[in-house]
Length: 118
Image 1 (cartoon, one colour):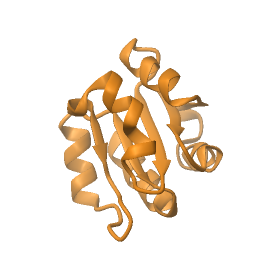
Image 2 (spheres, one colour; image 1 turned 30 degrees about the vertical axis):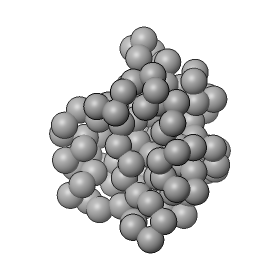
Image 3 (cartoon, helix red, strand yellow; image 1 turned 45 degrees about the horizontal axis):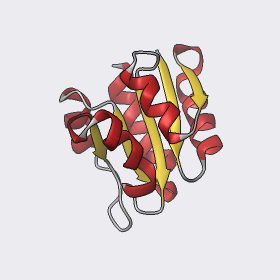
């Protein structure tokens, strides 16, 4: 499985967290937003994780443009941390691109990987 990391902030921190949790189960690559979303669209990657200060705009803007809203989900925003049930539902519903705020990286990446890897 390959996860690409886009978004506007803390990409290396997100990649490090993915590697810490998933280890050898996933390949992780940091890309700019257009490359990352295109990798999903072409089947060269399985999931997109991105962070920004709002959880949507800078984290998912290009992913939404390339993959459509049907494949993208904002899973945390300022003042609204990630919810386990929402993340479980979004993964189950076939979402492959996830945006969140940088201050929720630990919890969000943990919940996403728990649902993706199970």
